[in-house]
Image (cartoon, rainbow, N blue to C red; front, top):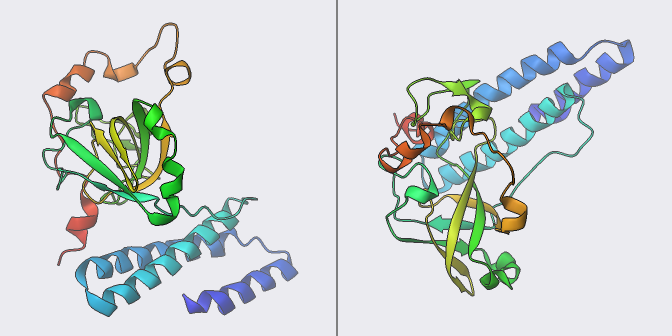
Length: 246
């Protein structure tokens, strides 16, 4: 990582002065950083104590560097995107195997969204709502593909036409019923998230805004959505845990 601060910057400077296209250099650098990221992810999962702390630091730096290089490749004009959790899920779902596929099929009882201290003031007035949208980082998912196998059909589908966790940005969206608002937590029913999932945001459900009018098509889910009550998740997407083990 430390070489990027000097060597990569010097190379990019020389490319600029010579009027050369830096894209080939940046693509090779991105590929190298992707390999480093996978290696550091494995280290985080296989170490403990200060060794794990050091691996987490290196992983954070590696991901930041990869985001920077990808931004240069895409000619982005916005700053790098960094999200920090506002809290974590305390859920009866300890593993993906057997977890409900959607919140509506969750029969395990209540879950709790423990909110971090700096964000607890944001809970004011949320007790006036019945449902809340929960946006979470699906931390057990690693990697993505253009098409993915799905639980409710026997054929793969384009990733953006599914609710699979195996996607470029593994963000989960769940609609949960509010049971209680506590000073440092939200107690909910119907949450299809693993215990320990980092929560990115909470937004109140407003029927006028969130319920579309008119005819609504739902693609390949037609005739298959009802399977959500009979099928549960398995560990096919729990790649982070499996890859971190020797």
